[in-house]
Image 1 (cartoon, rainbow, N blue to C red):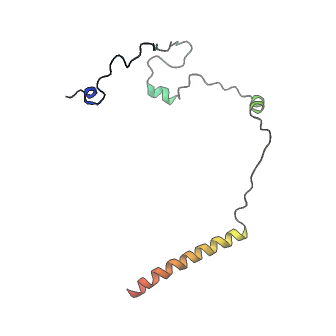
Image 2: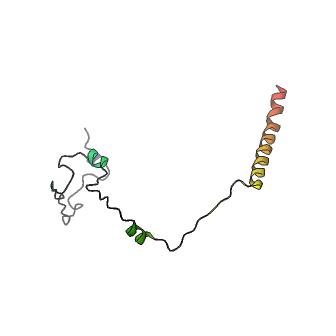
Length: 110
């Protein structure tokens, strides 16, 4: 079996590529402060959305103080007026007439 790292154009990474400055240590796990167990699977963590604690404190006053807009606007669109309906009707009729002008002579000749 061919070694996959040697088969690439890059080859096996040398130690000069791996800086010795970075020291990564695992997170400190405390079972007293976490709702997760030490042996929970990634599937369990994803199912719980990686949320260890969910605060359900609701304060509408703080929400409106933080998110209060300076002004409010709204847009009202009137879609189905008479001109719009007539335009759509004429477009559909003209499309059907144009299509039938090409299709009917073909079927009449048969």
